[in-house]
Image (cartoon, rainbow, N blue to C red; front, top):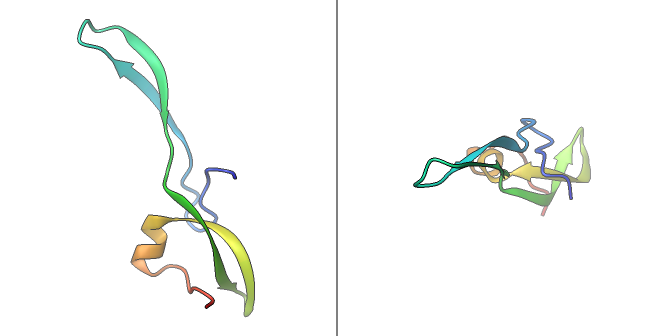
Length: 63
């Protein structure tokens, strides 16, 4: 599953893990993405949505 939200476009962010000795290693942060059934243009589809969009009500769930 792609770690990208179909509603807001949120995806992986890259940065550095910094140790106590100030060494830097590459790492990434991924959004909390769920595959849900949602109403899109009047029909039911499965889309990848981050939990922030689900919680804020930007997606109408199809039950």
